[in-house]
Length: 210
Length: 168
Image (cartoon, rainbow over all chains, first blue to last red; front, side, top):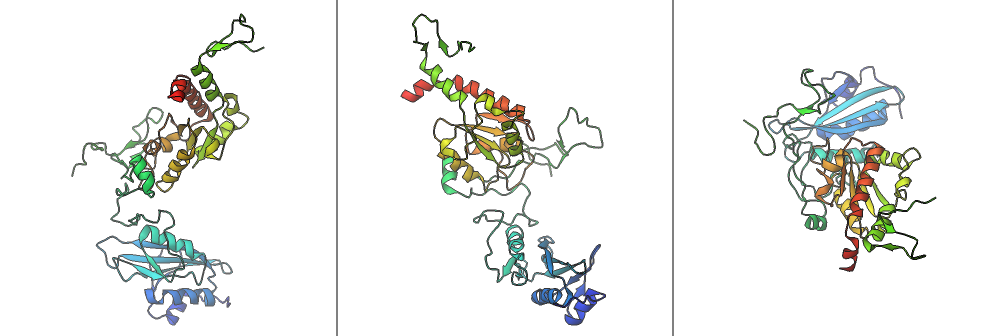
């Protein structure tokens, strides 16, 4: 493996992949690449630039009205040069986004990609075992998508037998006017008060005013 | 010297080795003082549960020190921690495998009501899937609170018409 690090990894990447563009970043160098070139670009960064450590694989949902809606993000680190780089690629399909799996480059990407599939619904092509990792296999939603409410959507319990026995369901959690705050401008005495909802004008029985 | 426990039996020394009691009292005496817990430790409450089993709080003083990780050998399931929807069916199955008579203590805010986890992933109170005898407040409750719950559960068991249930 070559350990020579280019002065500017973005420029070096752009000479190799002309379609790559610089990406706004507050911390580490960041680059946008076309999703079709993502696998090759990551492999090049690993093999030629010494970014040998995969820090994170995740995705961004920009909201259901934005297109492209989903962006897959990879964070790499060089254990020899001690620098990070962020690589992002917009997913082509807004309804069923997909991205290339990089488990062939870093085996540790396996669970990261399963988590991103579970919570954001980004399908990783050529993943060896793309199952949900946090929610149960039959769960019908991807909870970190923008249109998914924090309280959840009513569905069946993972186990049908137990669901029949107990009549329990996955319900949307009672939010009761949350978010819950410990103090509103300091007027609450914490020794005799629990955290309160910011807006208490509505609850489970009384709908939220428009 | 052992003092006579008049709640359980009447021993006036008249009958020699014979002790007069009620079947309910004897059965409940046995049940209350050897209540083996099934430690369903799912989150930080489990650490307090361990604390109540250790030397300072010593749950053995109340006959509940034998933590059994097999549901077949346990009497009282202590649900200590956050129950996710993914975990809920397993918890119910473990409860179903416990032999009668069996009891449940919901330890802490999460097990009792979902606690601070008002979320798509968390069961909003373990009483939705298993019958709970005692709820313990706190996040997490101190070991004294758990011991108090155990004593309250023992009081409840002492009031149970056990003999009628056994014969019926």
